[in-house]
Amino acid sequence: MATNTSDAIDDGETNFFDLPQEVRDLIYLRHPGVAWIDITLAPAQVQQPVTSKVCKRMRDESLDVFYGRNTFLLDLRGWKHDDLPKSWTPPTIFKQWIESIGDKNVAKLRSLSFYSHNFKAHVKIHPDKSQQLTLKFGFLQKAHETADGAPPGYSMQLAAKRAEIGLRKFLDEIQDSKKGQPLGVRDVTRICDMIASLQPFLCKRMLLGYQGAVLPSGDVRDWPDTTAHASKCDDCGYHKINRGAD
Image 1 (cartoon, helix red, strand yellow):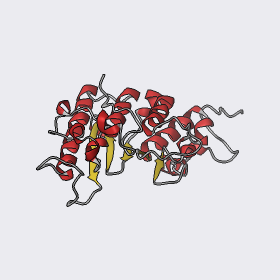
Image 2 (cartoon, one colour):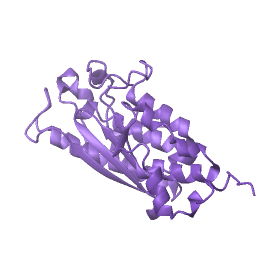
Image 3 (cartoon, rainbow, N blue to C red):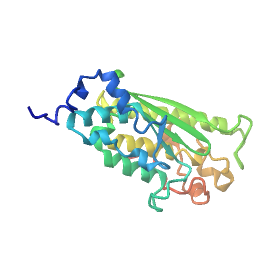
Image 4 (cartoon, one colour):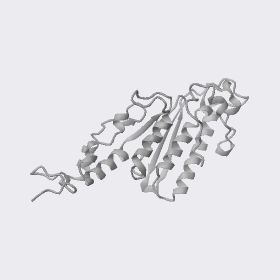
C-alpha cells in the first residue's frame, strides 16, 4: 500500500507520527538549536526549518515549535549581517521578516526581544491567557549616570521608568483591541516601531537636542517628537521615529 506523504512519513518500519508529540517536538527543536534567533545578525537561522517542507502535518507541527518555542531577537543598535541590504535598518529587517511569514505564523510567536544601546525589552505572548502581553523592561545604564544637558530634576532612571510605563500602556491597548484574538503582522510591527522609538528618549547624548527627547510622563500622548535629536545622533538616527500610530 502506498504511503500518503500528506499525512505520514513511513520508513518501512516506524511511522514518524507514531512517536509521542513530545518526542517529535524535541526533533523539531533541533533547528536552529540556539537559545534565541538574532533576526539582524543571523538571517539564515530565521529561515523556516527543512521539516516544514516534508508534508502538511509536519509543516504545521514544526512551525508551531519553531515560532512558538524560540525567542526572536532584534538588535536595534544598527549592526546587521552583510547579506542583508545596506539600506535596511533594524525595524526594516523586522518588518520584512514579519510580512514574509504572514498572519498565520505571527499568531504562533510567543517571545520577542529587543536590544538597544541603553535598554532591552522582552515581550511575551500568552495564548492561554487570551493573548496576554507581558513585558520585561531593563535599563542598561548605571543608576548614578545622567544624560548630557538634561534639565534640572530629570534623570535617566526617571526616563526609563516613564518609557516602561508608556510601553506597558501601549501593549495593554493592543491587547485590549484584540479581544483575545491572536496578534497579526500589523500588531507586531507596531510593537517593534514603538520600542524602536524609545531610543532617543533613553540616549545619554541629550545635549544633541534634549528638548525633543525628554519624557514628560508615562503617557505616550505627551511624548514629543524626537526628530531633532535623531537627526544629530548616530545611535538614534538610523530610522524614522514612528510610534506605530495609524
